[in-house]
Length: 116
Image (tube, rainbow, N blue to C red; front, side, top):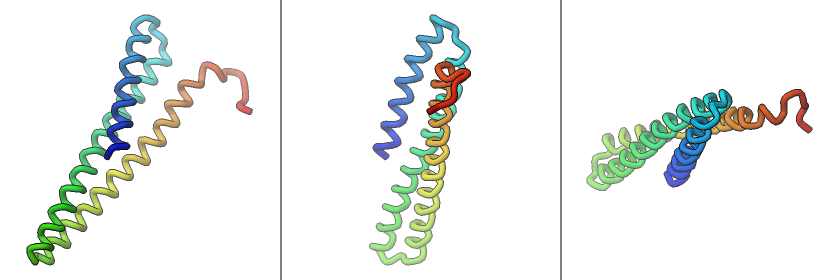
């Protein structure tokens, strides 16, 4: 969860800086970067939601098992695993998008040149 929050805060800061630069320059590459960042922020918010829900379900599972409610505890734990998988899947998607954002950043410096 800490890693998710750090990614969110880093992107929020970057969006603010890019937006200020775009307002003064109007560079269309910045618009593409801001659009990419907006999508990534939405993904991170969903990642965080699923991650928190997973932890809550896991905690509920432990409480249910503590009180001897085997089946509900197992169901809650299964749901916690499913929501954690969803959160991790979104994390993987967001990581892939960050590579696209870096490609956009480097696109103007690499025009007509092959990377080494």
